[in-house]
Image (tube, rainbow over all chains, first blue to last red; front, side):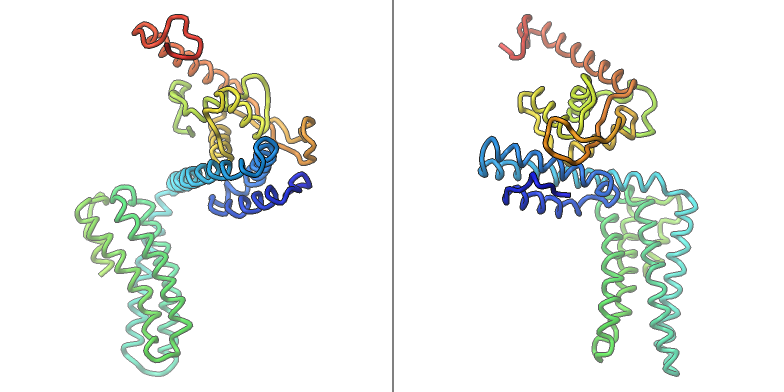
Length: 222
Length: 126
């Protein structure tokens, strides 16, 4: 992507750094315009070096970084709006079912653990919890997409936090569960996720984003 | 600036970035860097558009059918052998640009009648 014209070390280095920073943009935008943006940035670097020497590069970077931050935020916001437009009522229904199935899987998994019994029950319990996790995440993201705008920043962000922190905790727990005090960590993942749903439920009680049954998210979470 | 905007009037007022890009393309097709240079020259360096703002605006303008990609070719004025995407105005884009320019001109006219600007205004307030 970088041509021979960028032979000057400062230009070549700047272009490589800029190219690396493009990962901050949504993937589709990056794929469509990434190479053109790098080309334009390289042209700017070459012109700056020609006109003002390497000192000009600092000013160019300042302008470019501000532009990058502003446009990254704008592109992600745009992406979210497009996603919301593309989300059909059927998708929301699927997300709702996924959330319920995920919660049922979590309860079954927990019951298998609590009841004890043969070893394969325990393994089965962990497996059921792990299989339920993607369903819970899908459900939470669906709820966020559908009702996020109506519950404000906290309600929206708490659902995103749950969707990230839940699977992450379980994933870490999976590798540490052989160590005795850590065996509980895989179960903490779905619990974190559902706690976030319960917190969203508290916000939902006040803001009433759903047409009816605004108490359902808190009940589901608890 | 997407499919929710139906009539040309609904595009107005344009953002400074969109207006300047349309203005840069008014006298012929250009590639991204060419647009950037033109905007800088037209605004006497007051509007510095980075690649992110430039291509973010280009993306939305393509979606809104204000501009279109003409072709991809090497710029003969540079020694860069890489191909560049060239953009040009669509009929709708030209119409919107004219409407926005007229809107701004009428605003300037109001400013003149209120003695904000000199009547022989030529680029700077007195």
